[in-house]
Image (cartoon, rainbow, N blue to C red; front, side, top):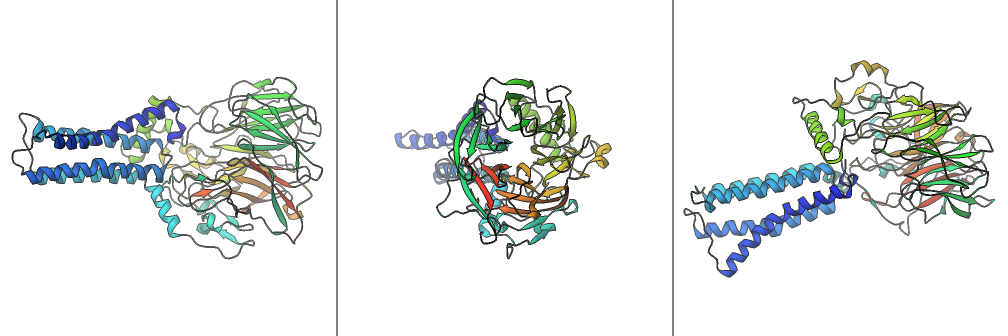
Length: 594
């Protein structure tokens, strides 16, 4: 949970408390200076010398005007945006410190019945207490610090070459430095480290404009070119049977349509198909044949549909409500897909929380579980409680919105769905939980079985038990399905698509492509790529490889974050970058290109 996840009013309250906590030591230091300048005598402990009293004064000035502003600036620059709990603890520590020092003052000389401590005792205590405050705060932010130390010292294992090198086991848990087209990874469920083997990092990326010398890399024979720019955070992409590209501009609450030239490499029309939507994400055409009659849109809280005739660039009428209510809050994206026979409408709904903290049992013997329990109770007071009813599931309906039921569960956040055109299987591109360490647990792409259970929140990647829910559901341990393709943890896999075109070489047919939005909960940055998952006849090998790389500038900055991906009518591959509002096109031109 990050501070920016809360409402503006809660953020203002917290920043107000932080301001008070920071200002109190500054005020006290200012009072000392004022009293000195105007000649107001300061009452000192009777057993202290003048030199000792001045030493205390200068110590407070150092803290109030020196270390606290420097410290606060460092935290703001290095660690922004703060996690909510980091800021909460920071405020509590500062307020306790200010109150405690005030109590010491009263004991030493403000009270008529003061029982002064010795100079050595007082200075030692203040130094130790401020040391605890500084150390505790830096400990809370330690993952961010460690991330930067690791990145700046270059603690990576470089990979030589970029042509189909296979990384397995711990070698597959690398970072962006080793990304290159053709680098292949294979992570097995037996490769997973223990929970908390590393710190849970807060390593938020800085988005920058595309540097003049930045270039994307693709495999030999392919070329990648900018197709469209100036879009409003384009997310999911879906291509209509006539070739028009429908784009979910979620933050703007609208669906945009781009029409390409006959050559497929130039936008000749750019229109807003529909607006006034609530965080739209999923888009699907129904029926799925060559002449759909409806465009379905999954808002964050509902599913609506628009009457559609092939080639329309604007919706001709107001939307019809199909599913009037979906769970709101938490993971907000809702994707939508239809079965090949058009009888089932699938809607993915992510969890309301990271790890179902609301159901963690009180356990005083486990510090982590006790802390998680307390955090959740405070969060319930500040922002209300969240339940997980119909969350972390794929729901299924009839196309008219009736017959609602859970198709599969335990899928923390199935951001993107795709129907395999060969087998008809439903697949999910899933973001797994945070907080268990840099390399745990993997995100994944997987076939979704009807009635299947994929572990969240009690288990992950098979029978690996989540330590925050230890012993809660032993009955589910042997029921957890292991996903087909395990991805580098925290890569944030978003939309996926199966390739069925004729433009790419034959070995690409049936493979899955997925957009990796990029990590924030990992000290060594990963993701920010388009990957190709090896799937043949609907069955995954478990391996995947980098297909498009180059969005990362350095350890702290990126100029793009892949979000949506789709196959164009001519067989080229399209993907969106929601950081800088662009759409890119990857085409195959022969072995001479790179």
